[in-house]
Picture 1 (cartoon, one colour):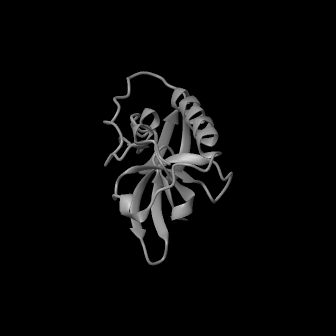
Picture 2 (cartoon, rainbow, N blue to C red):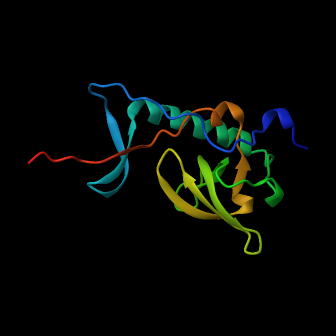
Picture 3 (cartoon, rainbow, N blue to C red):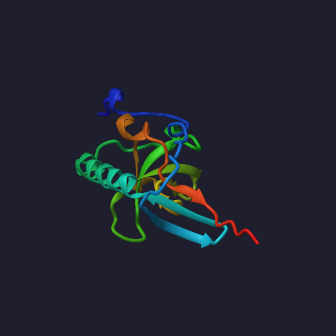
Amino acid sequence: MKNEADLVYLTRYGPARKVSRGRQICICVIAYSPKKFYLVTDDDMLQNLRFTHQMERLYAQDLHFLNFSELVVGMPVAARYIGGDLAWYRAKLVSFDVEKNQCQVEFVDYAHSQSNNLQQLRSMPLEIAKYPPMALECKLIVNA
């Protein structure tokens, strides 16, 4: 049985972060073009690993399942990354199709999307959902 205090039904993640000026070590998590790519600071990457380990422990118990009746487009969810390590990551629900048992999610800390079935989604704990997405959209500007 779900403990309602442990679940969150937010419609979005926390407010956007401000990035300090100066030098920071960043990791490019995905690049679509020089005009659109995403970076994560090394400190945020460590926080991402903590989130992943925390969710692995939490979801190992096979609790916190979601029903289609609970889904709201834009809500934070935990989604299993089926294209790689099968770990749980922070995601945002982009769309869902009840008849096909499919949900489209965007991994908010890595800025890419995938399709999951409902069994590959879990409710997001408030202590993890309160952090804003860590992938920072960037573009190169060339001064001629």
